[in-house]
Image 1 (spheres, rainbow, N blue to C red):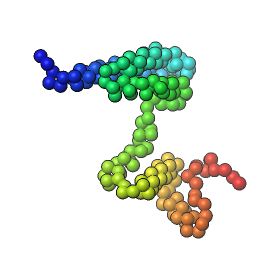
Image 2: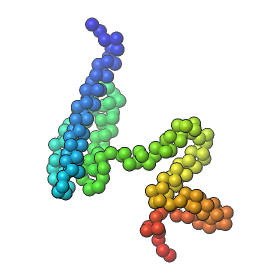
Image 3: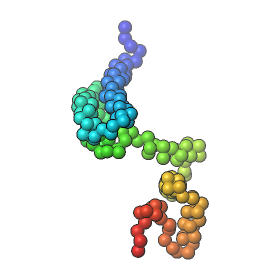
Image 4: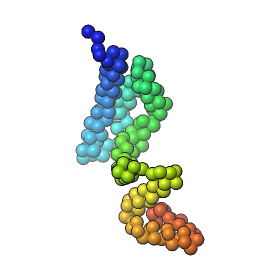
Length: 176
């Protein structure tokens, strides 16, 4: 019997199988990291690196296999990831770097929700304004600074030809 999807069904099955196999090592990362986080004793970075080496090797092998995939987009993605393979493991090599970008995604979420509910902007100038104001809002929120106070100070500075107030925390502001 011939699949109604023809070659696409084979590609789809191949892609899903490759994705399933590829995700297995990342499940191991969560287990290793979970043990590390739950451990009463602080593990050394080198121990974590040693535990991750087989996972790193397996992912590299899977990516190399993926470059030979018959689905060109999948093969291309695998090639692109291989070009940046070292960066994929920064969280293993650098203490304090998380393996996900959840923090960054949480920070841009308000902007994404705004864009989806307001139909975006109508010009490049509008897009630049939204990028900048969302950055200001997020930065001030992280620093627990008042947005209205900052914007008032910024508008007064613009009106009187003064330098705009800094978004840098006071700790990093250079003294003259």
